[in-house]
Length: 208
Image 1 (cartoon, rainbow, N blue to C red):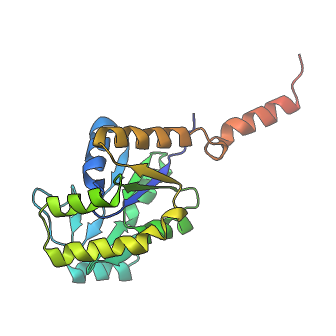
Image 2: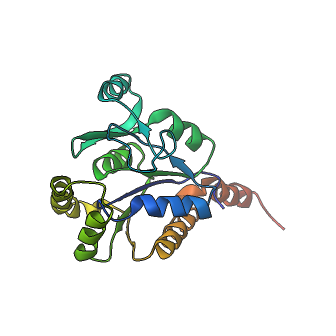
């Protein structure tokens, strides 16, 4: 088994249920380290600063951009979102599996900086279910919902850049699919270079 941690980036259409899936994943598999993103959007009902997001003012966020405090950041539907640098780099250096839940723009930036990153895209079973979920959560006005739906057209063109598409038909099934994909990633040769090197070095001078 590899000793290197896997950096997994999870994105999805707005309304795909990413937040619910991530909470269920972390509850069932607490060994994963979930990187908390920073955002300038307002907290939704029940969200806590420092747990769900770091809720920052626009001025604070832009100050961190200037100080290179993010490994990626993007502007989405009039708000900033970003991944604080310190958490990710410190945990990767300790070999821990890290999960980032970020928007597509940021995910592609992460892939450039960390080529080994595993990119997963969560989607509902179909478009009608996506609209139903966006309307049903009741947290935004119609204008914002329409912006999010329109954004799907742009996002659909980029999904092919991801490693896996994960259907969120039920939360439990989606959680198991994600865990299985990440677990299998550990068995790729690139995560087991020391084990492979052991066979190469020891066999070169071995005799019975």
